[in-house]
Image 1 (cartoon, rainbow, N blue to C red):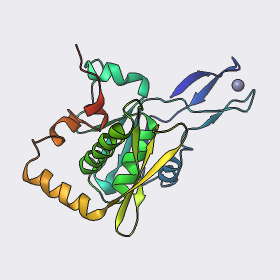
Image 2: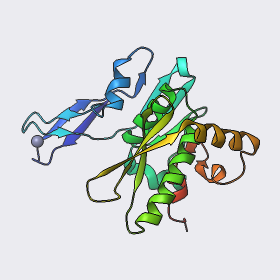
Image 3: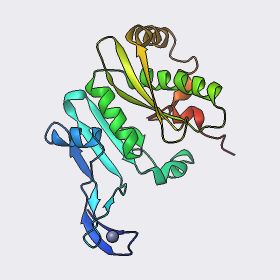
Image 4: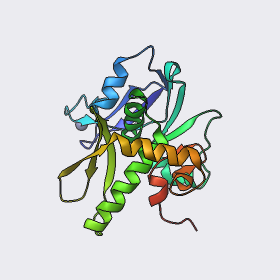
Length: 204
Ligand SMILES: [Zn+2]
């Protein structure tokens, strides 16, 4: 679909953005999502790399996944039911969250358990620095640990946190014993599973 983009240099141009990508057919998109280069558009006038976000469907049949990616811009509209999810589709909001989810699924991990671990990390971050608006991101699976990056704790620094895989297993057991207890219950908002659901301000 053609979209019109306006750069900071005020140059306005048209780009053709796919509405749907199939990761089994376009495996290079997996790498592009994970390294942050996906849909980076270079302004033809001033060469600035731009990262606009557009609605996108990601299909990944081999991982039984269909993800509807909403632009970060639509977050508020989604919570107030102004943006509806397609049936049989999970939601993620913003390309960074899409990339995070693809990395989690690529490692064969359960997104809701990863989001719960992020929640525990952010609780700890909040104790350390209540002023900070920290965010937590999945950064990969090592031999016996899961690596997370916490942004926003201190200036530009990224805090690296390694959580033993045994904690993942224990959290997963807790979840399967009782999926309706917290924090699992509040991590899900309809088709949208994200730690952001626990952090959003109360709606009126
Ligand atoms: Zn430009």
